[in-house]
Image 1 (tube, one colour):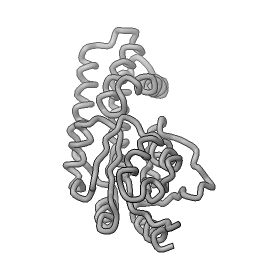
Image 2 (cartoon, helix red, strand yellow):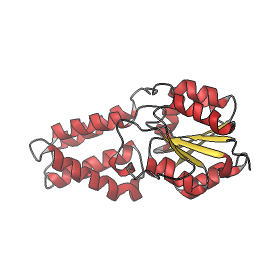
Image 3 (cartoon, rainbow, N blue to C red):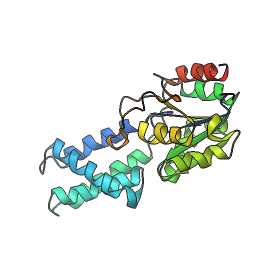
Image 4 (cartoon, rainbow, N blue to C red):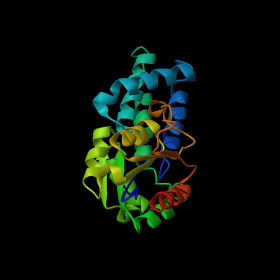
Length: 235
């Protein structure tokens, strides 16, 4: 059976453009606001616990992050957090929502080149309005044949997305910086899973690499992924 790739899915945040960097900067700002109440490491642990606890309520994205920061501030101050601190947290979140999109190196060239020969999908988690804004500002929107903004990424997500195009998951590839969300469930669906690490990855996206899986590959950047697609297509 031919292994030619017909459909390629791209993750968005920290695969095509910077994202986690802005979360880390906001967490630094958050730690400064609450420095009189708790130390940075303890605050980080409490915030991460709140984010994990709240995923089922708020989903992924900046708005849920803002609410988790507010909840954590209330907890660590034993309900004594000043209104001015809450206002600063809201302002920090709004700054994140308004931040310009910074494409990662080789993102535009890789997407442009692969769009010439393959069906491209953008498959991303997060807040609908924020992800639509970032895609519009990125200048990459016209390269994608379809955009899926989902609440979570599972095996079923990829089966459904790739099932609408070409030869389904068997002839599809998913590219992203998260082993947990982009690679492992895509492999389970029957697609190729290509891991392109980012220097910063949210702790809740960590997972062990599926070493030995015949359709798993890791590449340092999107430029190397273009070469990999050609290699698979011509094998």
